[in-house]
Amino acid sequence: MKIILTVGHSILKTGSCTSADGRPYGGVLEYAYNKNIVNRVAEYLRGVGHKVDVLICPELQFKRSTDEKAYKLQRVNSGGYDLAVELHLNASALHNARGCESLYKTEKGKKIAQQVQNRLATVFRNRGIQKRDNLYMLNSTKSTTVMLETFFCDSSADCALAEKKDVALLIAEGIHGGTITCGPQEGGDPAPSGMLYRVQTGAFTIWKNAEKMKAELQKKGFRDAFITTADLGQLFYRVQVGAFSVKANAEAMKKKLQKAGFDAVIVRA
Image (tube, rainbow, N blue to C red; front, side, top):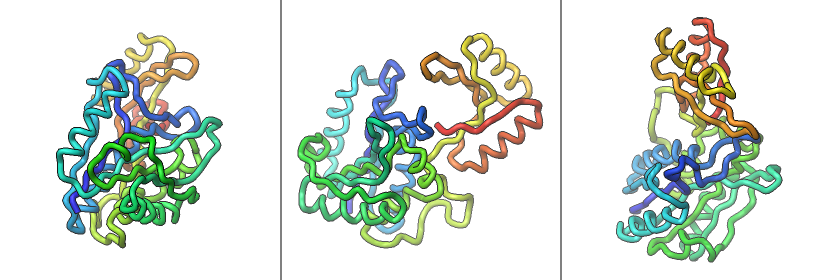
């Protein structure tokens, strides 16, 4: 099959992400998670003979979330694809829901959605497949299209399950309709879970204090130290080192920082 994998949502010119954010509830940022696993899904599918393209919206380019629609549809509809699969994570109003869902519109889409759902449901609570006719990626694409709500990004329990599994492989096997035994990183490092792990050395309410710690880290050889912001009712400036898809690598950085005299904790992006 000729397949295009798309990642739902984007980061706007303002720096705001249009996706659900489960991080305040012990979860993950929907967009970041899917961006981190999509190429692995593609590699698995290419390994069993499918032709696969990946489509991620450009970051810091769109003024509004609706700009995503035109960008994606033009590329999906001009590519002659047999199948489009868009990756999402779910979220709930009370942040207490769990499980996987697969969405479709056509009968061909229903078959693929059920295949993927069967694989995801070996790990996550099975919320079933749903026929939907109010989503542009299902309504306006020429190809057979399914949308995946792989798990709830604001459920710490779901995210803990995802951390232990190769979710990209589950999705790829569902799309393929069978077991995939070859793939990226065979015989190498542990498969990335899709989480991003950053090692944090401090969180400050004053920018100058964060800058001071960053400078100290860089002086001691941690050149990739950076500052991120988090709005947790109050704006915090978090000083972090590295972004790792394999937790063991983050653990190694944490030990290195502690040996250098810094307090360090691992946080998920």
